[in-house]
Image (cartoon, rainbow over all chains, first blue to last red; front, side):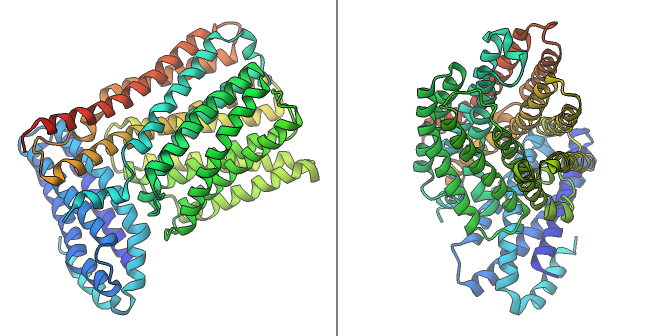
Length: 147
Length: 430
């Protein structure tokens, strides 16, 4: 078990939830869409907060890099949250076009972000955090499996 | 905390990739004009100066120009190693590339050695600089993704095809058409090494990303590019050393590319994202065209019907490579416009008017119409190439001209949306 495998798998879990919301919104099934949206946002927040509160601080502590890759990742998390908010507004107003436009933008933002994490940052975590990997992975498990 | 600087430290300025993306469709339009106004003998076969010019308007003018723009954007994102001083690099690359291609292609079409020499003198240093910078970035990356190897093969292909051209041209006294034995190597390394590997490397990333499909199987990612590199080397050497093996190696290369196309279509069939998507449809068209191109190529090895060579070229360059690039531009350009607007305006808290989302930057409705036109233009071109005496070339040429300009116009709308939003934001009192 590595950070790359666990967090990568969690990206896929979020992707699946994303696809479900999009499909419900496109079909105009608003009650299902609202529920799917909520599941998606919860999964995303779990993931983002696990990084922000657990993995990134550990990495910054161990590597001494505070303004490095993690600050860029945190910034992109904030960009994603702005889009979550836009999607939430569009959902409550039942404006499908606006929802799907914001969702498309989120998808690309999220995917390029995930690619950077899976291909560069997580392998760095696996190296730098090797000594405390077991403890951190156990904490990570308990955080992202709740939903 | 200054978020703007952080975000832009990873992405080059918007003008860096966009200048390339906005130039490339104009070369495609020039190719269409050439097709409309050229002498009807253009369609008699591959080996004419005008056909050579036409091919290079597509390969260098459209495909290479888009590649140079996209790589400058994608390197920081996908492998985490940006070019240093991106603005200066883009300026150093853009003008010599564009002027070099224009001169080179004119020299080819009109058979003017001087223009060919001038064009090469501008183009080759620019491409060499691009190859060196990209190779350096690939070398430094921490990423172990299969895309890195694919980009490496693509660069090697580009380097070799350029070297072969530079070697053969003086030998033939700068007189195209060049039915020299080594033009086969130029085409082989160009088609499989450069274009093939480049699009495979990009597909590894964008196919799973954009449509939420399963990843390419690890076996494919591990072996496809090394196998292509090995077979391509064997195929090249076999011409002089063991010609009896050349056809076998050629067919194996075609088989591998066909497997890649089939695998991509299969992954796309399993996609989790079920929304209509223009980029997806461009990619499916690209993969079907690749399969057809390989089929006509194999048929051409047995039937010796010269029309098959033209069909293979059109299917590979326009049906496959151009469609895939066109589809990606409709993801990349709207996303970049959004990303840069967002960094410049919203993160600073100066503008609460809302940054337009990707589907507002370039409207999906118009991109869908361009796809339809693209499809019609491709179908008419294939018919014209197959039955040149029945269908006058201006119909397919006119459709391609409209198609190229439509693409260019749609991309331009993205830039106009960017400017409009910035102006609106600046009009708001802070």
